[in-house]
Image (cartoon, rainbow, N blue to C red; front, top):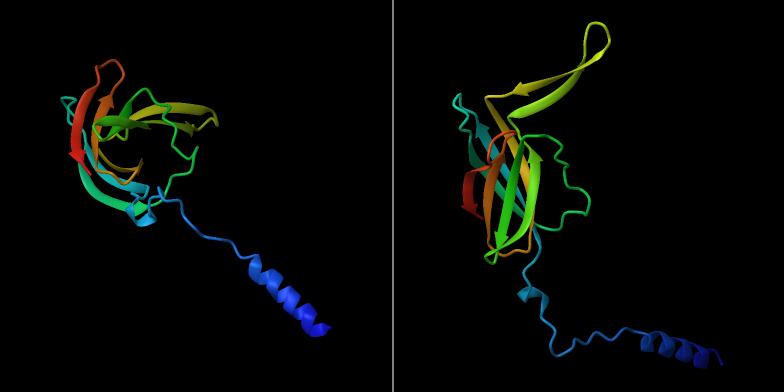
Length: 157
């Protein structure tokens, strides 16, 4: 009786295994292009005549996805816009606060909050960009308060 019970239990466990068949039109995973996060480091230099320049310092690409809602919020009047083009179409636009223009709040000697705008001569900053693994072209636009947007840099990843 015990042998019959063990035979029955082992048959049940063996028959419960999941079948792993793929449909005929399924794409093997090694042929799919993995999602990637690209970390871009830049150095921005301001000039007295108002013509700012930006240079790419470093580029690092890793497989993965950026979580939804983890993007930085741009709340300044002076912005940098990163337009990401993949397959000759605009896939995303990322807005960040301009690294050379900072708005800070501080406590003065009378314990009152004050605010001040600071303009730097040069700053380093980074941006995270989500791609689908395909080659991309990045266009960086500068939007300053009271001026028309100007293109600072275009490069391919």
